[in-house]
Image 1 (cartoon, chains in turn red, yellow):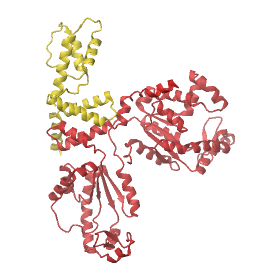
Image 2: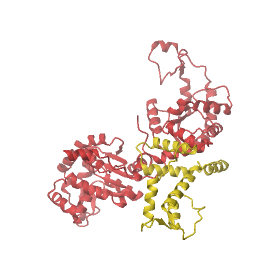
Image 3: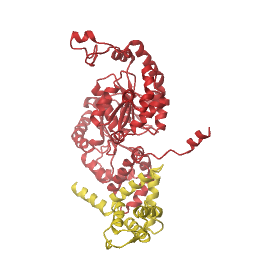
Image 4: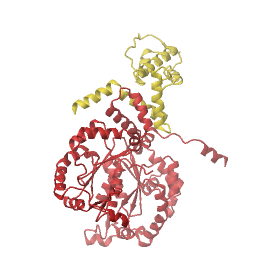
Length: 444
Length: 128
């Protein structure tokens, strides 16, 4: 008892510098500071940096929402310079600095965008809403205004439920269809320039959908972080039911990014084959078909993952941990993955993929009755099925997986979910984008 | 646009910001504080205090470290090291060796070493 207490009391050793830097986002922290320094070029950089760090607003949203003119909002022509000043003043207000800001409908053209930039205002995300002109013209025709509250409704898309409000609604003093078309033309003329200026942080979102869908797409986008130049060593976990394509994706990733591809089962067999000390301990379990005890597996994994090649290139591990207990052990051993993927595949697809696997005992080549049939009847005749892939055994393996997966998904909160029922290259591109980009902003 | 970039580079040069950021990075990686942002604020406040002669600059090495360093260099325990070793030590810490005029046979004692180190470290922070 006393021993265990002592163990818990001692503070864990500090993480190695590389992992510490990655987990705390040091690169981004320093880069943001440098960006601000370059934008404002203060005479006293030290003072400026202290204030910048105290502000702690690196993650505050800075969003521009742009799109075709709703309908003549501003009939008065305000000079661009005045706009820029106004906006800059407002944005330097403490609330904007602390909480971030969303700018709607500005900049409308290249000149305004440049003015924003020279005032040191750079949005981190620019949402460009688009819809076919016909839809826009139709929509502007259905707009209705509540003169009391100034709230805007729409005859088709957003009709108020309160009959009192309904009665009050009037058609806003708007531009005619002709004038809306003119505004649209002007917008289309200016749009490419704006697109060009903000293209690295811009996403076009189709506004011709139900507004909840548009909102969820916009939200998903503004929570993403753009690719950063921060050094990154991938430590990836691929979790999922048997047959979901983990080993294939792991191989693809390992090949493209030069990370070490590790499969738990494979490592165990190699240890036994190499006759290492651990291998000898593991052998009896493999031989009798019993699961290898966690302690041994962890020893093996920890040793492998601490090897130089894994530390410098990164790694992708498939098929471990199988339950939360193993996950916790991994954590205790100071092995912390920075990308976790759960592969999702419907039951029928799993059965189809696994139950039809066959192997040619002569060449060792693997086939699949539906997806990769043997080329000649001669080979077909001698194909054998691995007992693991018999339906009964598949069900058993699946049951074990399913009983543990929910707890695992709760354990790995920041995991990504992969629809494994797609073309492998589509899946690969998705996984790749999750690995290359920094993790999205956490929800608070 | 090119003029803007040149301006920015000049600004960085003038205030020696790349070196400063490098030191901040080094301090962060060495100390690995629980709260990096607060740590950086403290470091910068110490730079500010040092500037106003109100406190010590955030040296990466304190007196005990410099002592230990000398002991490492003085392998035979003779009580002194050679100028070449002294120069190397300064270079390792990123300190300048420009105005070091020492004949090759001069003996650098522990006291001289520590004083010299401290002077150089102070100099390197004084630009801020």
